[in-house]
Amino acid sequence: MSAAERYTDYGPLPGKLFIVEGIDGSGKSTQLDLLRKWIVARGYCVYFSEWNSSPLVRATTKMGKDQHLLSPMTFSLIHAADFADRLDRAILPSLRAGAVVLTDRYIFTAFARDAARGVDPDFVRRVYRFAPKPDAAFYFRVPLDEALRRILAGRPELKYYEAGMDLALSEDPYESFRLFQGRIREQYELMVPEFDLTVIDATLPITEQQRQVRKIVGNMLDSCLTRPSTPYGRLLTEHGLSGHYLREVGARPEI
Amino acid sequence: MDSRSAERPEPGYRNRVHDEAVRVLGDAQVDVSRYPGRLIVLEGTDGVGRSTHIALLREWLETEGYGVLHTGLSRSRLAGDGLRKAKLGTTVSQRTLDLFYATDFADRIENDILPALRAGFVVLTDRYFYSIMARSIVRGIDRDWLRDLYRFAPAPHGVLYLRVSVDHLIPRVVTRGPFDYWESGMDFQEETELFRSFRRYQSRLLSVFEELAKTYGFQMIDANRDIADVFADLKEAVRSLLPSRPGVAS
Image (tube, rainbow over all chains, first blue to last red; front, side, top):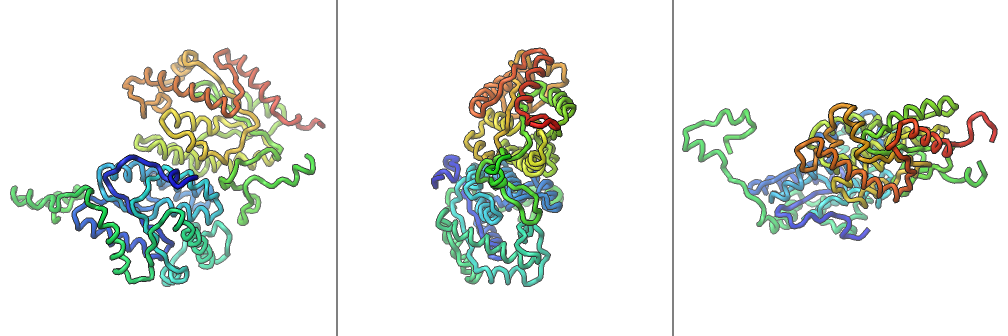
C-alpha cells in the first residue's frame, strides 16, 4: 500500500483538519482543548469530534464492551463504523463548509490499538483508507512511565478493554494496562515516520507545547470560515429584548 | 483425515482467555478446508425465495441426519440489533452500514460459523458478503475497498445463486406486501415513485450479481421456474457438496 493510497482525496476542502494522538496520559486532550479555545476566540467556526462517540454505533459498542463480546476483529470493525459515521455526517461536511475540524484521536488510534491486539496492520490501514489526510497530525510523545504516573496516580477504575484485559497479558488490571499501553506506544513510534506525524514533546510545560501547536496551526487558518463574534448582541440591543428564551433553544444570549 | 491435514494450523488463532475461541485477524482468508463441516451459501436478490428454500433444505438435511446451522445477515449477537436500528433511520451513510455489516459478519464467522464447521455442521447461510458487496457497489462504494474489508471471509464450499429476472421477481414481491424502502433503492436513487425505483434498483443489483458470480464462482440456479423445480436443483447441488452421509461408513 503506497503512501498516497492510505488516504482518500476528497478534492480541495476549504476547511482544515487538525488531529491529536498519543497514549492515555500524554496530555493530548488538554492540548486540543486549549487549541480549540484559541481558534474559537479568533472567530473561526470550529467543529470538534471525539473518538468512539457516534450515537448510531454507541449502543452496539457499549453492549460489546459491557458483555465482553468483542474480539480483536470486531473491536476493530465497530470502531471503524463509528469513525465512518462521524466522518460522513459531521467531519467531511464541516470541512466542505470551511470549518476548522479538531478531532481527539484519529485513524492512528485504531492502527495502534488494533495492532496491539494482533489484528493485521495492513488490513486495518486498508479498512480506514477512506479517511482524508489531516492538515496536521500531532503526536504527543511521552515516556510510558510518565504517562502511567499521570493516569494511575488516582487509582482509577480501569475498564476491561481499556486495560487490554481481553489479551490476557496479566490477571492484574493495572499490570495489564501497563503492558497494553507499552504495546500501543510502540505502534505510535512506528507510525511517526510512516505517516509523518508531527511530534510534540509531551514532557514540556503545557504552555510550551501549546505554543508549538499554535505556531503550526495558526498559519493555516486564513481561508477558514469565520462566524459573527456577537451573534445576538446587536439584535437584542436594537430590538430592546433580553433574549432570555434563547437559552431554551440552546443559544447563549450573553455571547 | 490424513496426517497432513492434521498438522495444518487452526484458522485465525486461539485466544488465551478462551482457549477454544477462534479468532480472525485479517491477515489472510480463513481456510475452512480442514474442518469436517460444510459452508453452503444461498445467494440471490430480495424476494427471490431464499428463506423458503432454506426452510426446505434444513428440513431435508435434518431428515437425512445432518446437523444444520442456519445463519444470515444481521443475526449476530453483537451487531444484529444495532444494525437493524441503524437501518430504521435515514441518516446512516453507506460506508457506516458497510462497516456495521462487516462487524456483524465477523462476529458470526468467529462465534457461529467457524465453531459449527469445526463441530461438523452443515452451515446454511442466507446471503454472504456478496449481497452486502452488491448493494454497496450499486450505491457507489469502491469495490476494492469492499474486497479488502472481507478478505478474511472463508471461501464457502459452495455458493448457490438463485438467478432471476426482474420480470419474474415482480409478481413475488407484489404478493409479499408493501415495497420495501431499501429493496427499492429509495435511499439513493432519484426516483419519487416506489415501483419505478424498485425496478431500476433491482436491475442494477442483478447486473452486479452477475459480475460477482464470475469473480467468486457462483453455481447458477435458474429461479425463473416453478419452486419445485428450483428446489430439486438446489437439493442436488447441496447433496454434491456434502460429506459422506452420517452413520454410513465411507
